[in-house]
Length: 582
Image 1 (cartoon, rainbow, N blue to C red):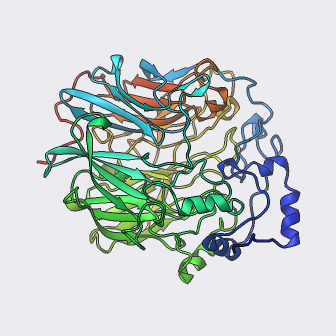
Image 2: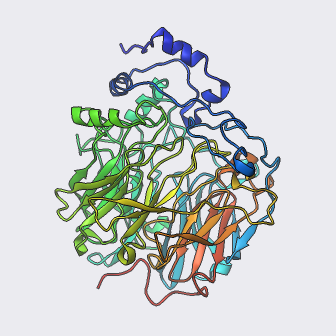
Image 3: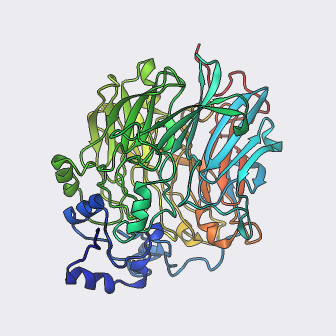
């Protein structure tokens, strides 16, 4: 019978003496009695040092304590759901909005959940549709006229002042997908959607070193670990037909649900309708070298052949040193990482490879944010044998994620890509997350060319730093891989949590500047519960072909316009989205 794992007395005392703030460990729960019954988690625990960050003290270690009363960020912090306020923060939620070179076209309440949204757009039957979705909900809006959008489909809970209208049991999931990618398939002459199914990241398990039952639930998860392919016979999911299902488990690709290994497919796969699709996945449970407290996998990448979407075929698995605990070389590389043992850092991918050119169109290079394992470049010229080419390592920045997404919208023009992590704690209770402009003109030697400027409040604000505004502050992502029009030379737009959306001028990627922003007022408790406000604006999706910015906030979705993009368009553009290869 499995036994609880008992610590040396010295470690037990260290846990007992932790301050209340140190015990706030986010979705991983509060540190408590070690109870490890999973052999792989036990191997990870025994192989790594135990060196969690000391909780920083507000007003002493961080806060408005810099020269002239400027904000100084913590050097390190634990993952926390209970981040304290620091002296100088606003006492309430700011009810003012701020804008530069951005106008509000419309606001649509109660579209999202307060936690996350993936977004997609599609032109079908003479209309354009916007999809906003996460594992527990799906909304479809007819946005042909973005100033007068109409909701045409809704599934899952709708959020209001009392929370969600439906309960979602993340421990008993059967048929909810996460990220979604939509592409036109020439052979089928139809739009095809590929949906990722992964282990839920919230509410499934507590800290893996203490929640033995939660770890067991993850190992025998009640939902697919992989992806499903749907033929889209109409714009809404009730008109979709599943044409394929695959697990990302490479130990037993025929394993039934409940017995599949690995993580499943994270976020939205990278696929434009051609032969090759790339996704983020841990292929087996031994890809376990990660410090994140309530996650047991270190995902790499998989390449799949989608020539026939009804029969996807696995091509190859791609990883970097420091992921597989079954490999002595990987374990050695992991232990050399300064994050090893911090019980905080996410290690591995969260998104698929960013491909400036699809592999089947001659693309030879891919870029991957591998969390605390760094930023990596990959040679994908032979998709059956992809290989790492170069990597970029920077100083640790935890809590929060590191090297999460990669934006390749300026790569063809400049040889630069952008990559960043994002905050996971509120109230700036973690190091600030920079957006790095990375020169990858030599993919064997990626170099940081610049960091994006840190947004600062306008003069009319009643605070001097966005950290004083409360909630999370820092970059999230610059939109999905399939934004209509693909991107715009010289412009990139990021969701920035309590700093709204920030528009950057990247005409010269070595000297990025802020050229515009829209920071909405925080919602009120008459819209959504105030315990959701921290997330503020957590996603952005841009119709570059119609000059419309969609900002996803905890209480709804903003349709925005900006002269930095050009005049907004109504109706369908000349070229349909997603594009159709000729």
